Length: 166
Image (cartoon, rainbow, N blue to C red; front, side, top):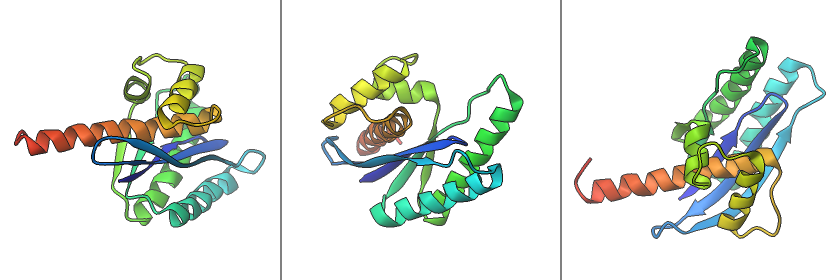
């Protein structure tokens, strides 16, 4: 199963693509950041949609995972983040992908083992889990962690189904 994870942001949207086999082994495919900083806000939203659609066309994931919006102290920032997330969701849904949403706490617990891990811990663990040569940029690492979270959840769901619990 090929999974794309998305860490939405109104300045940088991270993406990470992994593959997970039947045994739960993870393999890195690609990662990066859609850097839209320095443009007017509406242009940034359009660029997130278009650039993510291009990534999806190139890598053809089977499913998607995206981080849920958290409650920010600044309402304007939260609204902008929500709109950036919306642009990413539209790109994912238009590509016909099933989408799962995870909180930052769920993502960190599944990838690092601690729900309150910092950015450096996420980067290091993602590097280790995916056998990368160096730590990915923070937004890309968060997106890869989101994909890893989904891989773990999907594998657990498959086991439950196989055991007749679902």
